[in-house]
Structure formats: structure tokens, C-alpha cells
Figure 1 (cartoon, one colour):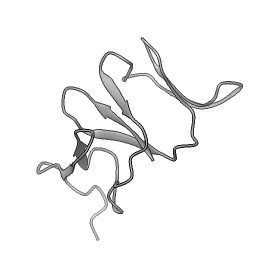
Figure 2 (tube, rainbow, N blue to C red):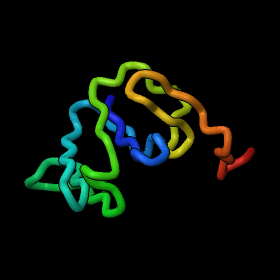
Figure 3 (cartoon, rainbow, N blue to C red):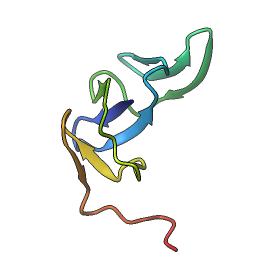
Figure 4 (tube, one colour):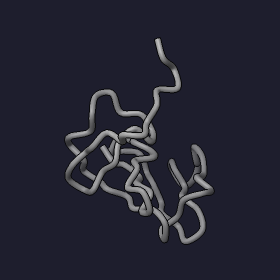
Length: 86
């Protein structure tokens, strides 16, 4: 797996399979094959986010902003609130 982490908070914003192309640009992040992009991430870029690749220990219940990741360790954010409570 690979994850995009916001530098200011260490929050994991996106999680992808290792096979998914991710291009960290200076103004945006492009996700998908360059000939047929899936989407752009406009609020993150190479100066305010880090792409961690070959992540083998992503939490089974991962969702965006639920966990911080420092390149090795995942920690659930104490301020995270489930937007879909049962």
C-alpha cells in the first residue's frame, strides 16, 4: 500500500494499492495512469504532503483522517469522530 500524509498533521489522507500511480507535483497530486488520470488532489502537493510507499501495516479499518502515520507507526487520531455512527 501507499499513503499520502499531510505534513502539518501527519494525518493519512489517502491510501492506495502499490500499483496505483501517484505523482507528487509542486502544485497538485495526480492519481492514476498519466494517460487516463483518476483524479487530482488540489489541496495537497509535494511541499505540504509526503507519499509513503510499500506500507505493509495499514489498519484494517483505515479511513481518511482517522490515523496519523510517521512512516512506520499508525496512531488513531484522538480527535477523530466517526461520521457514520451506527
